[in-house]
Amino acid sequence: MRNFIPIAEPLFEGNELKYLTDCISSGWISSVGKYVEKFEKEFAAYIGCKYGVALHTGTAALHLSLAALGIGKGDEVIIPTLTFAATANAVLYVRAKPVLVDVEQDTWNINPQLVENAITEKTKAIIPVHLYGHPCDMGSIAKIAQKHNIIIIEDAAEAHGAEYKDKKVGGVGTVGCFSFFGNKIITTGEGGICVCNDRHIAERLAKLRDHGMSKDKRYWHDEIGFNYRMTNLQAAVGVAQLERIDTFITRKREIAHQYNDYLSDVGGLVLPVEKDWAKNVFWMYSILLEKDYDSVSRDSLIIFLRKEGIETRPIFYPLHKMPPYRQNGSFPNAQYISASGLSLPSGVTLKEGQIKYVCEKIKKCLRSYI
Ligand SMILES: *Cc1c(COP(=O)(O)O)cnc(C)c1O
Image (cartoon, rainbow, N blue to C red; front, top):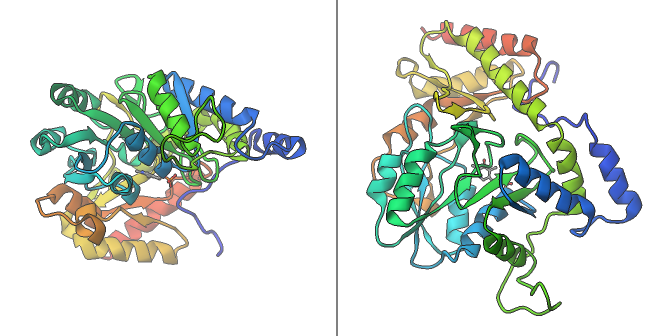
């Protein structure tokens, strides 16, 4: 399509090809190789953690964190109802129960007050999700977790480099989980990592990642593990992407500010927030259409923009509405955000002219509804 503007696009302008070529010409293409260790060390340091355990997806990072921390059958794990399904799936993989709570109206992140209300004697962990790049209120969540002796596993799959009060997210909880899927802030094609500060946990993660094999005795397994390793090829791309992460984040923030400028005078839109204690990395620039437009017009807007060559995405469906996670309760904020929100093109390759074009088309579409 002419002038097609995708929702996101990876950018490989650094050493990606050089490092990949190094893997191919040296023959180190599987999970042994210098880039895996380098990526683990450098990514963990970037977040401010001592240890990194690289994995083949972000979902594996969530699953392995729960498994390594001994969470299983009979345990409850509190998660927001507004997140990507992987957060809940990981809890179900270890046969624990995801307990869903509503999100805050402004940040779209898990509401700490509701977390506290949902705690029972079975609660073992909380998984705050830093949705679309805005950090959760980690201070309040940490206080609750400490009071009730509950583990925090951060789902930072969408928030590389985001900060809660000058501390990078993923480095606040017991374990932080990241994804390097193709549309994430940095990518390895598919990929993920767990970061933490506890050597014992890091060793457990590394063991479970590699079939549960003993570190000292080859082919000796005293528990069931997984093959969740990251390849040297993935890590080679990751090392190169990490060299450029600050440029990507700066560009994401610029894109958000440009959208804000072009959309600030449009009535009926809610633009993304950045709390004064937060650094939002705006993984996706996501907006809400206020009630006057009603939920039908969100879908009409998506169709209208698609015809103009602009790709957008609706916000995730709340988990409590879908068969595997169905739960009764009141989740008005998640429901409202899911029904009336959409993400606009947010890739680092976007030009200001394209942002202006997207905003003009949004205005044109909304005018026809008033
Ligand atoms: C992308 C994502 C994941 C899963 O990552 P994969 O690498 O695709 O497995 C988990 N949680 C959230 C919130 C995500 O956006």
